[in-house]
Structure formats: C-alpha cells, structure tokens
Image (cartoon, rainbow, N blue to C red; front, side):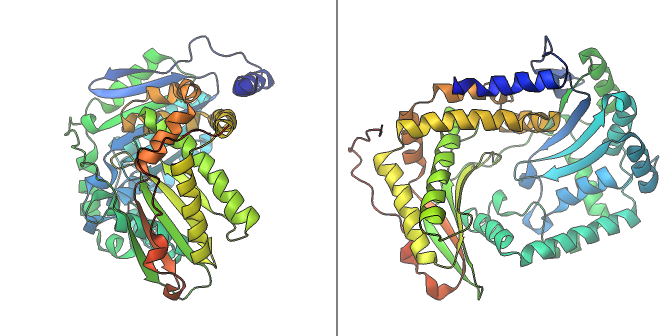
Length: 446
C-alpha cells in the first residue's frame, strides 16, 4: 500500500483545492512554425512557461564564461524596446507576474509564472522580453555589476570554490570546465555589444523549445506561439561534445581554513537511460549510508552528501561530498562505504524502502506547475521529455540487480578535489580500494 502514497497525496490535494483531476492532463508535444512546444494542461490557476535554449557551456568560450547568464538576465530584467526597465517591472508587478532566467551546464531558460486571469497580458510582456529585449547600456552596466559582485562572493565561498574547481579538474579543457555564471574577471571584460550579439546567436528554432504547464486551451497556445515566435531564425542544431570517462585522480589545493572540503566526481549514465533511474536510487541510498556513518555514528561532518547531477546531459556524473575537520578519517569511511556497495551490493530492503520514499518525494516536489515545466524541459534537453512522465513506472520495474550492476559499472574511478590543509591528507588517501575479482558474483542482501 505504501507505494501508492503518492496517489493518495495527489487526491487529497485535489480534494482540498476543490477540484477533480482534469480529464485530459497528459503532456503532449507539437511544432508551431518550426519551434517545438511541450504542453501539459492543468486545472491550476498558475501558468508556467519556460523558453529553453540548448547548449549551455557549449555556446561560448572559456574566456566568455558568464556571457549567456548575463545575456538572459538583461533580456528578462532589463526592459524591452517598447518598455524601459521601470515600466516593464511595474507592468509585471501590477498583475503578479514574474519573469526570470537561469543557466546550467547544458541549457539556459527564460521563465514566466502568471495567474490565468492575466495570461494574455503576461504572455505579451514575456514574449516581448525574449524577442525584443532592450539591451539598454545603463541597465546592462547595473546587471553586469551585480553579476560581478555575485561572482566575487562565490569565489570567496569555499563550497562554491570546491564545486567549481572540481568541474575544472575533472573536465579540463572541455565545456564543463566553464563556469556558467562566470568569474569576476570574465564578466568584467564583457561588453554590451558582445552580450547582445551572443543572445541573438543562440535564439534559433533548431536550438530552442517551449514548455507550458497551465489551464489554457491548446489551440490558443498554438496561436500565441505562432504570433510571437514565427519570426525567429532557424539557427543551427548544436553538435554535442563527445562524452569522456573521468579519470581517477586527486587535486589538493592548500588552504589555511578550519574546515576541509572534499568533492569527488564519478562517471554516471544519462538521466533518460534505464541506468539513469538506477543511479538516481543508488546515490539516494548511498546518501543515507553516508549520513549514518559519517554524521550519526562518527560526527565527522554536519552534512555529508552523495548526489547525481542528472541535469548534466553531455557528461553526466555523480558526486561525493564532505566538509570536515578530519579529512583522512572521513575519506576512509567514504571509501569503505563505496567499496561495500561495489563488493556486496545494496540490499533488497534498501531498494524497497527507497522506491517508496523516492516516488513520494518526487510527486510532492511536482505539486507546482513551475516544477513540472522545469522537469519536462530538462528531460527534453536530455533527449526525451516523456521520461519525466514514465519515471514512476521505471522505478517500480527496477531490481536490486539493476542498482548493483549500474553502480559497479560507473564507480571504477573517482576524480577528487580537496580544499583545505595540505598536511592533513596525502594523495594515497584518495585511492580507491581494490575490488573483489571481476568474476565474484554479488548476491543482494536481504
């Protein structure tokens, strides 16, 4: 019965909100004047729209880190050719509509959230910002200054420094070594002309798509998309960078700080693959193991972590993290737990319990239209938005053998980055213990 808790939660939500589930709430896709649209009807009064641009860090050079994030910020916040920033912001505030942007390793997006009552007005403002951004010099300087300040703060933050440096170490010379929010140095060099030109270069139908989740008619949406975006150029389809296998290595950066920071990156499958679902649950179970062994039993860290960077599309990876005053012992415990899984596997009970909690947490996290539109969009960037809809069934089909085989396959090497006292560790501390012979069969624990 527990596995159906997500259904119960959805029904309770529907009852408390005074409506029944819509008869046709399944997402679907269609093409309007050359641009793909993914549409999911909803009975909720909040409409979420996201304009996705594929590529992310592949769209610019290392020297221009942050250019796309800044370009989208200026487009979303800097006003349009017909409305300056103040008039634009005032128009949005009057109707409770929000427009924003975000960037990632493999995509960027401009989002809008509005109330159905003001859908027409909101859509006009939103599409005007995308198609006709002002790129005003004064507003550009203000937003650029804000981005530079944020980058400086991030560079001074050990956790942010560790995250960024681990990507640079693992993916040296490749797209993932670029910081999509930029550095203070790279952002400071950017000019208005460069940023505006970059924005125009990425706005092509072959490299963009739209996700809409809301209580609107499909025919109306098609008409609005055609009117707003039919004039966009075709652009060029992005050629993805070839995936690489991460190498087992450790980079030690000496810092005289009280707490030491460690992050490891491990190879992982694409989120839309069957193995991707296995990796989701495998890392979630290992996260629980880390928490028990490193925090509860030994008090080595307040927040140890294991994660799966499922939003990374070109080169997906899993992560291991800890901040600690005892890095040597912490690494030993982390290695032991990783090796236990590789040699002995996860247990049937661990998988059963994780299936129930993962499905429940996923659906609770999908309560808002904004979250649903982001999930559909990121799965589409990965290759197939339908994987967002089939996730529950894919999880139910998983066996413990699937989890064990996937984790063993991808955990052959981990690329570590250490930020802290150099004298507290050595490179040998980061070496993975030897596995049992390859012909040793893993029998799942009960």
